[in-house]
Length: 324
Image (cartoon, rainbow, N blue to C red; front, side, top):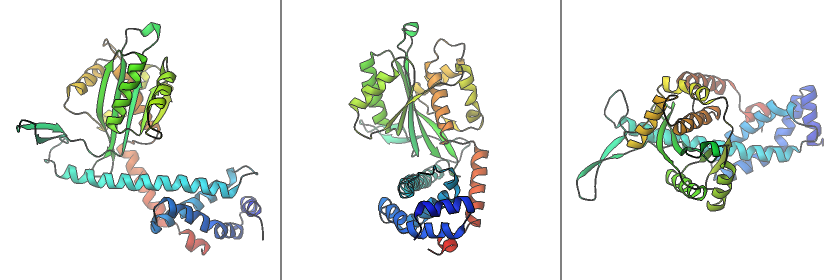
């Protein structure tokens, strides 16, 4: 029986379908068992994950180093692919819920993000009714250099959701600016992130950023959310211009709240306004979502969906192709 590395080399060097078929047969049970365990027994989804893993193996095999441990790579990639499948299922459910919520709103040109609820005194109150987030992130701009000792620290939180057609949209979900001490800042940021159940906090990598990250990691629960240090690209004006297509495509929403008006006023006055901290947070946060592929322009989304449907309709399953 040929060793797995020899079969892989035969496939890479000679394009041997027989070698790849034997690889699939040899590792199919491993990949499927890992997938079904991670997916809580969902057989159909586990089969889809296994198929994706072997398709990726065929596509990426030529990029592997000679000393690659194939079993280890397949295990890691199965975990990665299953995790993506779980997130995709969660996004689909959130989209369905948001679509139902949007259809329940009045038929108007802009979504209405408030609903009427009774207050403690029994009187009706208009309260925020955010859509269901597919992803929640926050962006923090610290201000602890001597040059900027009078500047604000600023924080914004964005929620990503899908409209009734499945296209991604962004909602400004929270914002503040303050002049706390470093220790006070860490506690305030943690409270804001927990309240918004963020998936990731992005911190502009400048004076105080590394300390804030370390202090937050000390205070937060293990795995509560990720913290990323962001290296700004270009100057402030260029960063804001880079996300302007999102506004032109009507992808960014803000609620009718004073803190949202504060953000809108500052961004609209940029670069001539007195403060620029919330503007930096907006351009940084939206830029991160854009670079990460978490939000796409409507045309980009439609093109990707069209390509995805065409590809899925034309490919054979691994079982059909290799008889496993």
